[in-house]
Amino acid sequence: MPKNRKWEIIGLSADKSLKISARLTLQQRLQSVTLSIKFFFEEETPENLHEIRIALRRLRYNMEIFISCFDKNKFIAFYQIIEHLQDMTGTKRDLDILAENIRNIDNGKIDSKTNSFLKKIEVKNNRFKDSLTLELMKFTHSKELKDFSKMLL
Image (cartoon, rainbow, N blue to C red; front, top):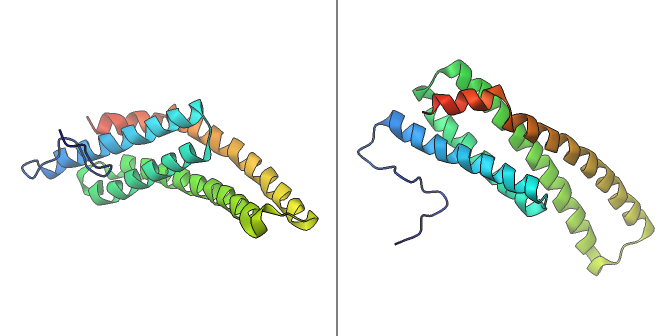
């Protein structure tokens, strides 16, 4: 049996109505987001954070396509949360990559100024990580997530 590609939606076909297709797509994208967050909480690695970011991006962009199929007020409220989380994960990822790239300059030979700069990045990154973790926890228990999930049934 052939493996589904990461962007494919299980059960989607040309004979499905737009609303059914929207529900199938968004259910699977939302499931991917919640699963990615679960894995991140189990092991807070840059790779798991990146997976959340990818899952949020896929959900958000699919939401943009299907907005006309749902109640706009509830939909937009949830969309704004997804957009905010995507921005936060992007900022955290940028800080991770910045520190990694600086460490890789000159084959890891770091002078005192560079080391001082890296420490500042690390402090900011840790504070931001705490904020992001709190936002992800709030999201997983939010009324908006429950309401959006119900809307997809």
